[in-house]
Image 1 (spheres, rainbow, N blue to C red):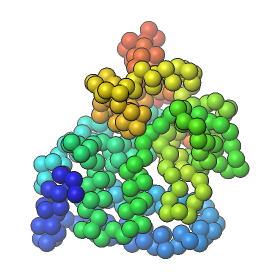
Image 2 (image 1 turned 180 degrees about the vertical axis):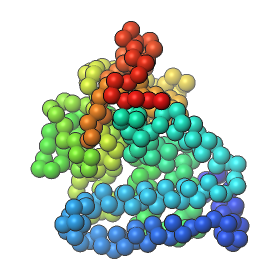
Image 3 (image 1 turned 90 degrees about the vertical axis):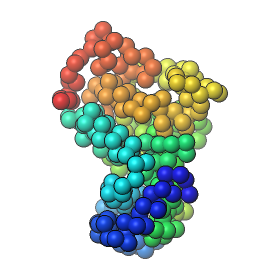
Image 4 (image 1 turned 45 degrees about the vertical axis):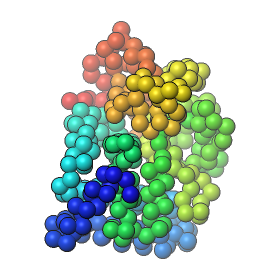
Length: 308
């Protein structure tokens, strides 16, 4: 068990004994998730109900994690304060409700706060803490497996390769594998070569043959693929410094600071549709982002996104 999780475990044992934490919402979510897993073998029932079974699995797991994260706010463990103070500050700064309120979507922000916001030498997240406490929360092996898949996920830059029936075909910018994905938000791409900034989740529980675009897609209108590859090459290095990530995974999951990707999205917004948000610019060239003050055409108020 990791360091912060170990401290929380000791505190939690005392609090649960004294019935200080209300776990009623958690029990309801846990029951709903277990019932879903029991039904998942008959995926046709979910399809007939208009609910994709893979999406349902991940949403139930994320909802359960969210409820448990709320429970952790009642645990008087100083190690947890960093998580919740950082989340509160980001929430106040970026108002992550999606356009027209903010370019940061709810799906993007909720994944960040559960799976990417890390604290301590072990880079613990709220999700890793909950996974480490799985026995205390009575989580079964299937649920833990899905939660681990969520925790391992990260944002990435993908090239749209086309469609296959109701799925989209994506390839990570520096990779070779073409990933067949369901996109629940509904965006199906406009043309091959289009770039997406999104979080893709893998097939779960060995029951699916496709992946999932879990966040509302951010479509990168400009610059082109070559410019993004150049950005990755100059940002990723063998030695990690304040301005260099040690790997693609670290860069896309953690950025170069806690608000690195928040700031990029916030300053790069140009437009949106219900199923996608459109961005321009690069993270390391401030003048390329429409809403950075270094841009000669800087707009202090986003055109379709009225930020407070």
